[in-house]
Image (tube, rainbow, N blue to C red; front, top):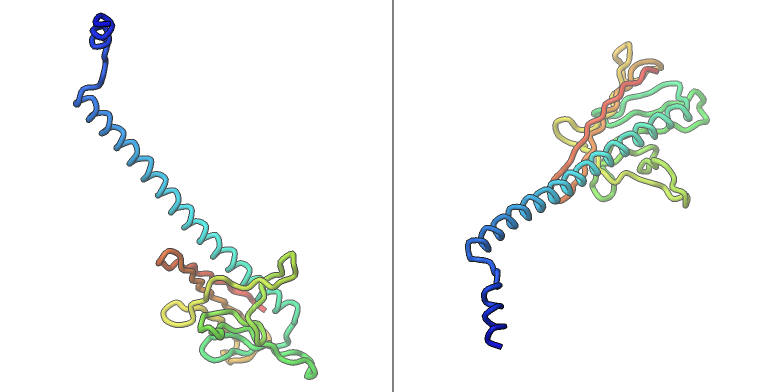
Length: 187
């Protein structure tokens, strides 16, 4: 039995303290790099996801405005106060005028209104209305606006330039993300 124990002691190839410290140091560096890569990747993914969401909503809002303009077919457009929107004036008196404007909804959040209701951007497969999840910046420098440029410089015209500027805002993780869109349409 003594020979067996002596043989085990001679073959004992354990680690020295220096080897353990070196292995743990190397492991902590590798794990630190892996952690940093994963957190950077996840934050980049969220940022790109929000930017894509803002782009999609901006495109849908512009499409909703253009669809209303083309389907309504106004004879004239009139500028509302302070660039907040336009009034679509029909060719026939029996048709009621429509309004496209940017304002605050009941919750105080900036929204696009077509008529008296927040704009319906599209319908889902279940038939429900899809509204903006972002808000429109309605105050301050670079806020959203719908401006009418008439050839004669007036506030109402049958032909001119319609400039739509949307500044979409979405918050995520305590940070605000914005996207500016500007389109000009001649009519």
